[in-house]
Length: 117
Image 1 (tube, one colour):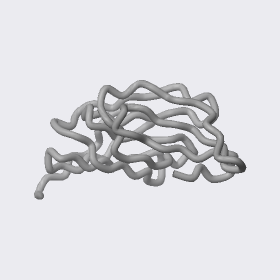
Image 2: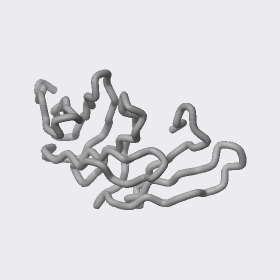
Image 3: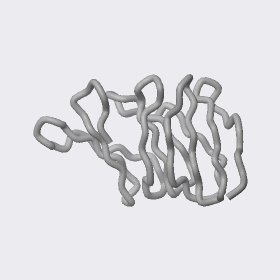
Image 4: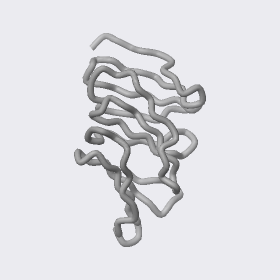
């Protein structure tokens, strides 16, 4: 995933890591650990941080640049298959548990659970 206005792009893997790469030459810059399952999806939050969804059922927010984990959101009952940063510091996550959750990053909590699939 390209990180706008930076020199980085980032990838997630089934080896449970995210990797940061230099856009100019493709050099590996950093390996980020913290998930207990494969990383299935990446997105950007409205404030420019990286969001990851994983087989460990969690959504994490990573500070762009320092790559520290700012927030871990738990609540899905199965793999998180997709994450999408929304406006106003919200994140949507879709899971193999057949739910879509909307998270409020400011409050660090699940705001809505949508069921139906």
